[in-house]
Amino acid sequence: MLRLVAAQAETLWDEALPIEVRELPADLAALDELLSGPGLLEPFVEHWQREAQLSGVSAAEHGRPTLAIETYVRLMVLKHRYGYGYRSLVAEVSDSIHLRRFCRIALTERVPDESTVRKLTRRIGEQTVNDITRELIEAAVRERRFRVRAVRIDSTVIEADIKYPTDAGLASHGVRSLAREGRKLAAKLREKKTTVRDRSRSMGRKLRAISRTIRRRSGEAKAEVLALTEQTGKLLEQSVKEARRLAATARRKARGRGAQAKLRTAAKLDELADRCEKVAKQIKQRVAGEKITDRLISLSDPDARPIRKGKLGKPNEFGYVAQIAEITPNTKRGARGLILPAASQVGNPGENALLPQTVTELQRLGLSPKEIALDGGFTIGPTTEQLEDLDPDRVFISGRQQPGSRRTQRRLQRYRTGAEGRISHLKRGYGMRRSRLKGDDGQKTWTGWGILTYNLDTLTIRTA
Image (cartoon, rainbow, N blue to C red; front, side, top):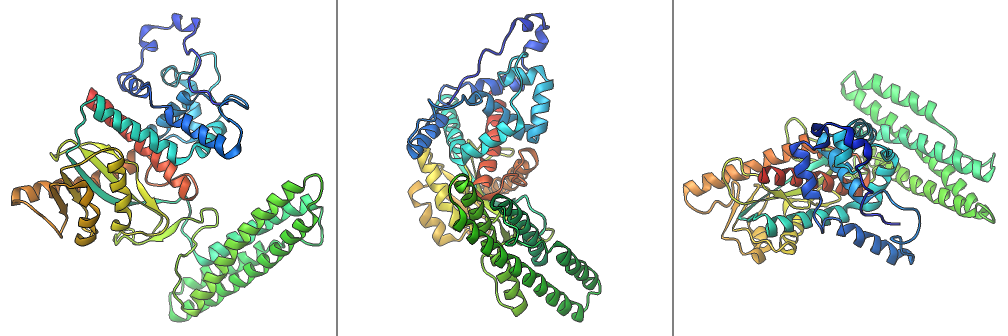
């Protein structure tokens, strides 16, 4: 059951506290005012209505009461503002009277468990968070005289929460995962003969041999490493065959009580086997010297992709590309504006592939910036065509299209360069360096909360 507003946070115990303790610090007080807006929680109501349409049961009126949504939003803002993990977030709020009052949690109440906050984040998803960001931008334009004159757009990589991927490492992970999931399913079936053998020891020997061989750094060593990698792929293929056999047995024996649980576990094992099969295929392609397209780099985060952005320090990154658009009231030095919901898609899309999403976002909010500053990765023809509906006075593409006088060009060049600093600010201060949620939907949710928190801080600075 949906619960939007928290219970009264003040109790009789609060009267015994000094006035300095009862009053929120200036920054939290400004955030509290922004988060108290009347329409800010409306996207959550719409989300619960969508869930009701899919399930046929009104989740807003049935079931156990949820954590108060206004408390949840404030907890997530604190999490991304201070870089807390879920457990440290709960611990910090429990120990702080100011944070309790900000989150509308009384001194006599227990702070929600970290698993409650974590699961609710997954359930709500990225669409609801982006709707809150849009509501915040519309309110700023409508009520706070935020006038949009310019926008700067650039893309960055949101890293996936994975370790550096190697073919042999993925094969080793696949062998262990298949054996683990196979044991779970075999226990449900009470099956002793049809199981997935744990080949971790054999795989470990291959990995150690690869480590010893690669140290030699010679042509012969490279050939030996490829041969050992091929052997890891064969071990993984054997585990995949056994997993397929066990899943088929589970579907055949799924009768009576517990049938649905067996089918779900079998489906999960089949899905994992599909990913492992792709890894084994990639290893064969690498050994044969064939080109690998749409490479799988993680079994736990299958949407992540390898991305090359031409950086000397980081030639290869692993994760997702997000296009960041910042709308500002001017193009002066130190201009700080609001960030639109990020445009993103799986793979390594170019700048112009993501630009239509950003243009649609501007049109959805009714914004028509006069000047648009873009990175040199945009091409002139497609960019001009995609921006035609916005009808800007000036489109600046670094190193490609620089309209206006020299003074105007220098001004827009400085303004565009500021996009690099803004992206760095978002990564350092709001957790957007690495997504701690798995999958493309998880990355979009994580990025959405970071952008929302940044926008709230921006508006508190403007009103200070």
